[in-house]
Image (cartoon, rainbow, N blue to C red; front, side):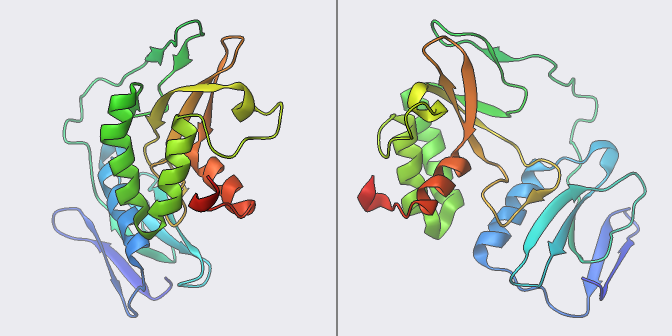
Length: 219
């Protein structure tokens, strides 16, 4: 917000003081908390949470700071979560290969689950907690996508052709809208009959169902 003043304290962390309070709901605050845990700034640079549009009606964007950059206008929060082990080797190659299929890169994900037990024990509870009061329809979409049932896609589309074999968690990335389901999203990995694989964001499935007016009673 324009009436916020940001400066670094003695420890080098950026602190912001705003003349007016920032109004957030629990869903937005949960998104910021998850971003704070996921966004590990390189070289100790922080991440900015920026208000886009009219407060209460716009969206919050997460983006990393450039080296030495001060918080821009409409910054409502600065996240300082540097890597705890700065010389930790980066992963340069990781893949998964479904039976009868082709290898699929996993570098876009920070966690991958491919057994029914793992998805049921770890992914379902996580997504219910993340979705809060939206969990009813979101869990239905997650379950029906993973078990390959529920509303059918139009014939010939990817969802109609592929069979799900794994789920990958996408860590919060640059310029993520925190008030949407894009941050910390779940991708479902599918294999087509010819062995090729593709990823489909669960948010895309949910949005398609909501656009068609489908609720859990329709699944």
